[in-house]
Image (cartoon, one colour):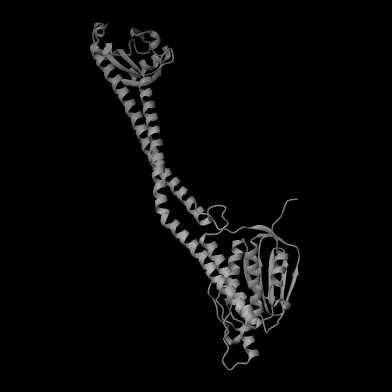
Length: 454
């Protein structure tokens, strides 16, 4: 199993792919299940209707056929043919109702027993229905002992009036039992098909994601190798610069470049999913104070803070604060211009005393790769970076003007403020620029405070 950088579980990107695979399997199985449920429902309804129609046709045909086998002769009903008729022998329940209009019918030739017929009031209803419809009627009615039956009553004519009705019944239990068997088989079959569909979907989604998993593995390997290959020469370069007696400015540039490389690699790992952000409770005021003290030019920075606890990643927040302060130092006025940092209520505010950033550029400078200067030599409207900035001085400039040019009009890589905005969003916060009272620029990083229960 592929492990994250911490070695305690799969990387976030791999975990997302696995969740996607499970989701695709679930969607595949759910879609198949929905289709099968619709088809099974249609099949069950069709089977139920066809069985009911079959029963109705059976009792209707039997009752109509037996009604033609009996007859009236001078007002006398002859039932002798029922003893020999095959239709009568195959009937589950058979009876003949005889009577006059407006009177309760008498019951004759009951097979197998009187208890198999409906109650007397239901027989009266059947008789009246036959008289009203003057044709075969089909209905459902329970027998006297509670069995559910389907009945057909066909009229027997005595000249121009209905003198009797042949009543034939068949139990619904047999048909319902066969219907229930069909439903069970459909349920088992659909369940088996859904399981097969889920297995097939899982295999297909896994095969489809193999290239993505290989790509993630290669990307993680590349980032790890890039981190090693970039940090090693930077460390060597710093040693060479120190031994060669180079200026403090050269050392600062090397340190900035090292921090920039570290930050960009961390951002690449986070955005690619090779590493997850670990948010822990921390004292924002202490983190800001420590970060400022580690800066080479921290003498010109004043920190005013109050105790604030937030949920955050210490390294990322330190990088964002460092970017804000160094951006203010480089572009907030001449060398040594004061920078004020204030920490309060889940916010870090950095104020400088430079020319500021035009209002129309204050969102643009948070974009990736935005660099440059404002017209007229004013402060640049760009995302100043914490890494090495190339100076843009001419060959005839003096050493002093070269230093000032580095701080006021340097063209950076355009990643500094973009990283600040990215860190803020990772912590569910915001980052923005505003005019400072009395001149200068306010850069604010806001992070939601963390409240702990007593």
